[in-house]
Length: 409
Ligand code: C6P
Image (cartoon, rainbow, N blue to C red; front, side):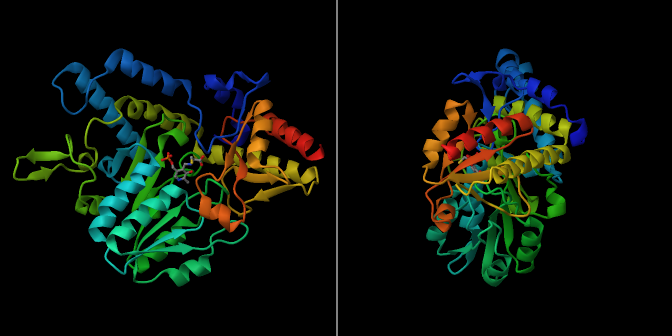
């Protein structure tokens, strides 16, 4: 589908939540980087699971258990196709990106990092891609190194190459920044890291719903996704890992499902992906997640990114047009997903957020879980508008109009 054939009204009709008033105004939902809204098929699939199929998976010898197991594993196959993994077994279900990164840090990191090794992250990471590495570096004696960025929000690649060395064992980098929108040159990062023998983990939280994903072509070692930022339910995430790495990693948690044989003397572990899925998983939400992937596939990532870029460009052009120097934009990378951070001069971001909320406009305010990045810009936080495929130009105009009134006040 191309943008010219994108039927936004039809797309919006699939999202019941969008058709309501907030504070006396039609809801304008621009907090999509925090979580996207869910299409009706996802909501219905979750309801149907509890109404019709509910059973624990991979265990029971009865029809409901069989059915639930089948649906659960169908989603795994959909994820495999969505990211073009070689095998479905390389796709592990987690709670979200946060858990996926912690899993890698606490298993791969714990097993393979030694004192003096280095883990490279960037200045624009979300706390979820900072703190787990800090924790494991402290435990193993490895060092955490940080790739600086430029004022426009792009990664300083020259500095990256200077930091990269044979000591580098892991490069953990955000694919698309949640605070600035910057799309990082991940293929270049992966290829360079591999040349020094390092593995690469990509934080795909903001890439999942916007960018085409092909893990084999990227040759990425680990990729993390959150279902709820991808039109799916909360509590579902994905950790993709290459089989050769997952096979040699110790398990994350012990319990049911992740074992082959247990005795009081010793335990043997299950194959991937089950080795990393201890206990009863979030069955219903995983099953419903398949319909979110179908929603995205039905439109196509190319059409999504084209439409969202139009929304972003319209917003930025509108800001420039009202010619005020009382609004400052953060994040001017050449390659961006549809996320725009800004500040109104003299106004705390939270106050701007409240004023917008009074007009029915939902944006996020604050540090966006990127405190080191905010420190780099010398600010406490920003107001962030983040767009999704169901947003319209008219909605962007509503935001622009509200901001215009605020700056001219
Ligand atoms: N960012 C935002 O409003 P979880 O919470 O595990 O699904 O995702 C964590 C996470 C990791 N990396 C990036 C780049 C992210 O954007 C997020 C979540 C939300 O920006 C909530 S802080």
